[in-house]
Picture 1 (cartoon, helix red, strand yellow):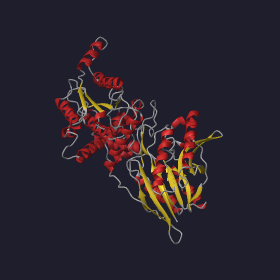
Picture 2: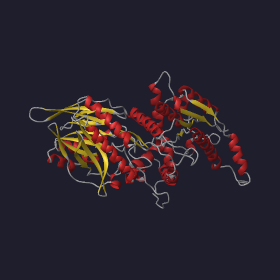
Picture 3: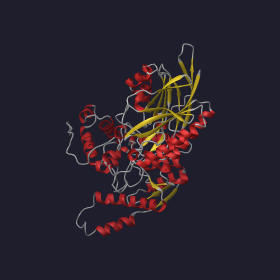
Picture 4: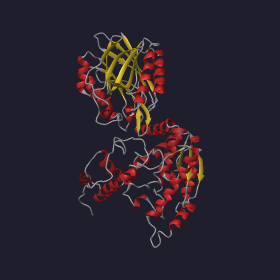
Amino acid sequence: MSLNIACAQLNQRVGDMSGNADRIIDAARRAAEQGAAVLLTPELSLTGCPPGDALRREAFQQQVDAALDRIRQASASLPALTWVVGYPALEDGHRYNVLGAFRAGQQVARHRKGVFAAAGACNDVRYFEPVVAATVLEIDGVRCALMTGAEVFDAQACARARAAGAELVLCADAAPYFSGRDTQLIPGLQAAPCAAGMAVVYCNLVGGQDEFIFDGASQVFDASGEQVARAQSLAEDLLCVQCRRVPGGELQLSGTRARVPDRLTEIWQALVLAIRDYVTKNGFQGVVLGLSGGIDSALTLALAVDALGAERVWTLMMPSPYTADISLADAADMADRLHVKHEVLPIQPCFDAFRATLATTFAGLPEDLTEENIQARIRGSLLMAVSNKTGWLVLTTGNKSETAVGYSTLYGDLAGGFAPLKDVYKTLVYELARWRNDREPEAPVIPERIITRAPSAELRPDQTDQDSLPPYDVLDRIICGLMEQNRSAGSLVAEGLPADAVAQVLRLMRVAEYKRQQAPVGPNITARAFGHDWRQPVTTAFREHVTGQG
């Protein structure tokens, strides 16, 4: 006895039920050509993930049902193949997250998800009702349990499936990427199913969807917990697995293992995928960004070109009297290295017009942050003007460190449609810049001076970021501790971080919340990012006090 399983790691588009069905049907044909008896697709593969409140629209469910009927009919043309497809179902006013099995024009099994994760992209608790039950079907002599998402990590769910006779789990998931996810995923896949004596075939979604990146990385483990197959990370893939019964009755699984990218390669590929999918799935022909001669815009440009190609990227250098000549030169140099369209639009005439208009209103008042913000807002207006005229998307260039402490200008450098570095710490920005240059040591894309110069917003004479902020290595450790690790301020000080810096960052993070809630969406690459994972009130009296300040 042998059973071949094809795990279709698909890049689906939310709300494109017809197109998603087309991609599932195409995957089924390719699976059948390779001799597969089972096609396993990701969670909610028919709708894309997360569909959000569209699930509550009658027309949305009608399109789901129509696409599902197409899948059922298409399965008749490949009668030897069992299709396992994820979709939402509405039954008597109750909505379920369903994994359905189709064969020879009929639906042969339906599993309604029963274990919901506390967090995640699908937000099951908001939209679906759980059904705690095992669903087991026999395919070519192998008893297969259908599971979705968190169920495969749940000991009770796995025990129920085993008690129902299952020996192999077919698990569909739509789990978002974060750097280091494997360190949680692999032990999880090895634990509950293997403890119950079952092998597991795990199929995950791939692609960018607003702030979420789905990395694929579908995997297969035998009942002993040994990984026997792995799909590519951050790319579509059709992972084929061979399952045969050996003397003694045990299942022996085999397949191929894709190379696992190193940390920086994986992060780069994730950001590239996020940019490409956000731009293409939303119908933009290209992107435009401000190229300042600094490290953040340089890295954003390199990512955009890798994602879209040079012909779809346009840069604007918008100098003021405070812009250094080397910034102009470095921006032009980098644009030339990457062969992108580059224009210089001086903002001095606009700045003079603003000051003249406000001269009476501001009479007797000294220049301060107001004039700095006007410069940033002029630049934002110019970028948005180009976007409006051409239909190209504005990429903002702010990083996670700046986003955390509000080192940005609302309606200025925050103006745009997508923020590729929104979850990238400043220290990681430098790591990625070095990594990208090391890929082409004979022709590095980022000028060395951009990497080695002290960072500056160049909104006043001789300005540097460290005039206003702690050193970035200190700042990032504090932000990570407070946000990702949810640690107390006192524990960070006890670890040796300066009490004054911790107190400063706490205050800045609190008062910057109103900016973050108006900032553009950007891709998540850490275990906790601003946006879906971060829910804080703008108006709050809560303060965390820090002892030991100077």
